[in-house]
Amino acid sequence: MDDKKPNLHRVVGIDLGTTYSAIAVFDTDEDTAVIVPDRTFDPPVDTTPSVVGFDPSAGAVIVGAAAKQAMSLPGRGRETIIEIKREMGALFSEETLRLFGAKGTSFRVDDPLRVRLHGEWLRPQEVSALVLMRVKEIAERELGHGVHDAVVTVPAYFTERQKKATEEAALLAGLHPRQLIPEPTAAAIAYGVDRAEEESKIYLVFDLGGGTFDVSIIETEDRQITVLATAGDARLGGGDFDAAIAKWLNDKLGRSSPSEDERMQALAAAEKAKRELSLHESTTIDLGGEMAPVELDRATFKSLIKPTLDRSLRKVLEALEMAKGGPDQPPLDVDAVLLVGGSTRIPLVRKMLVDHFEKDDDFVRADGDPDTLVARGAAILASRFEASDSFDLNRRPTAERQSDADDFEIRLITEHTLGVGVQDDRFDPLIERGAKIPTRKEKRYTNQKDSENVEVPIYQGESAMVFDNTRVGTIVLDKIEPREAGHHQFDITFKLDVNGLLEVKVFHANAGREYEATFRQSTSIGKIDMLAESRRRLLRLVEPGVAEPVEREEPFSFQVPPPVDVPDDGPTVDLDAVPAEFRRLFRKVTAWTAEREAPDDLAAALREFTSAVRAGTGLDDLADRLEDAYDRARR
Image (cartoon, rainbow, N blue to C red; front, top):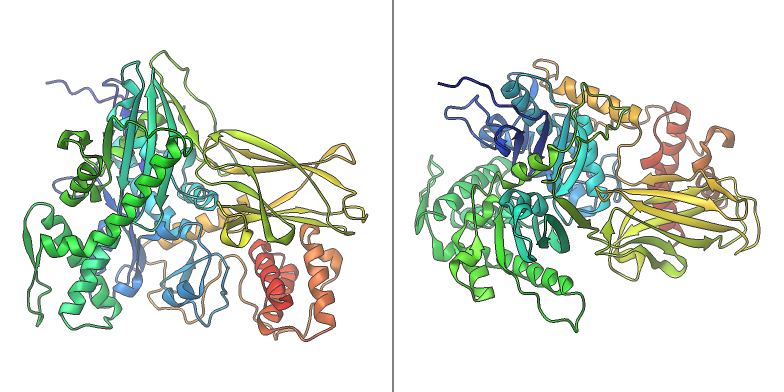
């Protein structure tokens, strides 16, 4: 018997999923990617639930299967976070303030979203980091050495904010994110399309996961993988099937307003029923206790999930239309549909696609395990990178191994148009949707009025008006000589890297030099020191006995603590104490409030901003809140 250990590459591939996550490594001896199993189970399992909870008996945060198993226990539903991937890069709305119990706290609409776990308010990327820590631990136990680098997958339709949050999640987990790759592209690599014959082939990758849906049109030719088009929905997936079954179940049981524990119990039962209906024509849902068993058949299930399936098919049509290159172009001749994601196991999904394309069953391929395809594809790509000896937040390793003739080339596109907000609330695009990345675009802009500062809002979306698009952040140009409108000429350059992450540069044409612009990303945690503090806090949370098993009454804000002094009537800081990039905002708000009574939200935002200036803590989020409150007050 050969006891030789496999030669496994030390840069891993991770599918950070909405409901389940998986990790894979590349076996260089066998030239294949293998899933790293969690051997704490018998038999070992290939996926880890993307669930985070608090265990009061241990006084610590728990992640994965332990958290998922505990979520239906009495009193544990409200201490469990599920499907956090849906909230990556999100801002609070009135609905989510209520949904996540943030009403009446210091958080406001358009603040970066947070969720509460045992009295701690966590960003979505922090919760995702806890999941990544868990799969990293599984890999290190299996491989017998530290893991410091990963290729992490993201939905193809993720925005810049969502990708940035994913990058931060990896860093918080102690992983250098060597590349973010779209999930459908990773799956296509795992399917082996990179090894296809020399003639061109067109594949439609249908990726229906637990909480996100992507469809990508991919062309392969002579070891090149080119993404032609993408479409998707970051809030569509198998979790919607579970929610539909759970609502139907609660209605059947007469629970019109279920408690949090009842809701979690119904969701757990719904997921089990969904899996059984993939194999059988009917199933019995038994919640135990005094609840009568409920029968669910496949016909009822079909009617419950039809609205979600219809939404996915509309995205398929959108991607096909985009891929053909224009309204006058003929439809693409798709060679095969590749199924990805655990939710594609549902027979109704395959039937919908076979019926739509009017093809035989083998036209829709489901090779291998749809739950692990994405992670294995990421591991194949990860084999290109040289592993780091250690993890360092201050370092961004880029080393790749020497390429060889068998390497394939990936050509990705940007999924959303990027541009700036200009006068009259119009959106001025710089990088169009569908542009090949990496890419860079430059455009000249001028100042609109006599001012020492220029602020340029950055948006992502397809609408001609900024208020229908997603605000990514703001470019702040400070210390500008006040001159008449149109005097200053600024060349603004957008650069998208291979991950689809944005870098902004500004050249001041009048002065003939590059301008040190500040780009404030609206939902990012921020600079290295803030990431380091967040990482230290997360590590403390998972240590047994460290977290006090008593819920805190006051909300926690890891970036700026709530002020404990008596609120001031107005700002009491010198202008020089305000960082340069925020002075124009501070000056205009204080001038405006000096002449009139400020609305409550503006007064509160100004107090918090000035308190943070005095404390020397982070200002990015508070500046965004202050600017939004100021804009509302002036309307």
